Amino acid sequence: MSTTFKAGDKVEWDSSEGTIEGKVIKKLTEETHIKTHKVKASEEEPQYLVESDKTGAQAAHKPEELRKQK
Image 1 (cartoon, rainbow, N blue to C red):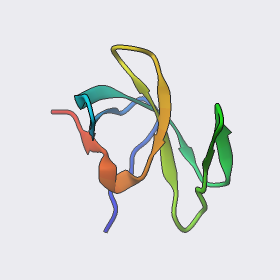
Image 2: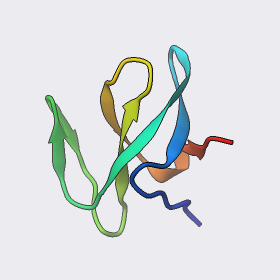
Image 3: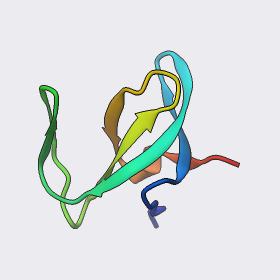
């Protein structure tokens, strides 16, 4: 069962630089482009647009890659 998130939720995820903290901007349910990266999101397999607290960079992540901050 996948975890669901809503806009504004504080989340964290792992990257090559360590754990990143940020917030959910929105749920993606259709193919989207972020800069030059194609995000293959769908209603059946949504992804979340998140923004890093530290850098302000935005990226899309699958729900299983995100954890709610405590």
